[in-house]
Image (cartoon, rainbow, N blue to C red; front, top):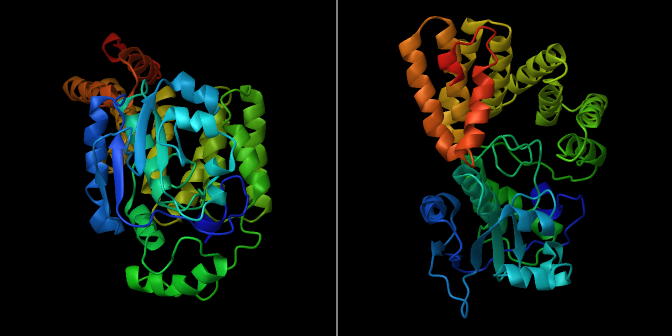
Length: 401
C-alpha cells in the first residue's frame, strides 16, 4: 500500500495505474549493443516470475512500443532532471516528447488512471553495469507502484542503492501489482480489501494481514536528511551533518528497521576521509543492525567492503582478507561487478601483504576483469582499484599496479 499510494516526494496518489494487456518493449537505435542482451535477460523471467505478459519488439517511430528505452549522454539527462542518473516518464516514447510535455499533467504519474506508454532514458556513456542497473530499476518502476521504501531491504525499489538487479521480492511485488484482481483506477479502499487474498494466493506461507494503516508511516524529516547527506553538490562537512541528523531522527523516532542501519552506513561512508575511527564505529553499528534483519546479506557485503578497507589501512591483512572472503560470494549472487572489482582488489592487496603473491595476482586479475563491466572507463577503474591497493601501509609496487 505504501508503494502504491505515495510518491517518493511524499505526495499521495489517489488511484493506481498500470498497463492493461500485453506489454511491448523497444530499444531506440541510440542504445549501445550490449543493452540488448541485458534487456533480453531481464524480460525472460518476467512472464513466469512476475506474471506479466511482456516481450521485446522492434523500434518503430510510427507505432511505438508501450515502453521505449532511449540512451542519451549523461549531461543531457542531468540538465533536464538534475541528480537523476536515469528515469522513466509516462506518455512519452522519445526524448523530444518528454521535453515538449515536461511539466504538463500528462507527465504526472499521480494523474494517471491507465498507463499507455512510457519512456525510459538511460546514460549512454555510463558503465555497462550502471546502464543495466538503470534498466532494471526504471523498467521495474514502469511496471509497478511508484514509491521507493528505505525499509524494504530485499529490493531495488529502495533509494539505498544496495541492490543492482530485480530480486525475488521485486518479482513478487510485480506479481501482486499486476494481479488480475486490482484494476487501473482503483483507490486505497478497493485495493486494501483485495490485498489479503492476493497475498494469500501468491505467497501462502507469509503472515496474515490483519490491518492496513498508512498513517504516519513516512518520516519526511528523516528522508530529507538522508537525501541531503547523499547530495553530490554539497560540501562534505554539511553532508556529514545531515547524515548525523538522519541518525538522530532514526534513533529519536525509535526506528528498528533498515532505515536505522542505513543511517549508520551513510554516516560511516561520509566520515571515512576525515575521521576513520568514527566511520569504523558507524559501520560496526550498521552491521549489527542489519544482522538482526532478514534478507540483508547484500547490505552486509557492502559494509564488509568498508570494514575490510579500514583493516587494510591499519595493516591488518588477516582481517581484510576475512571480510573480502565473506562478501565476495554475496557480491557475485547480487551481480554487482563494481563491488566485485573492489572486493577482489581488497583481497589481492591483503594476500600480497600476507606473502601469498600468486593468489594475489589471480585476485588482481579478477578485479580488473570485473572492473571492465562495473566502471565507465579504464582510467576510472584504475583510479578506484589503485586507491584500494594503496590503502595498505607497505603496499608493494605490484599491488599498486
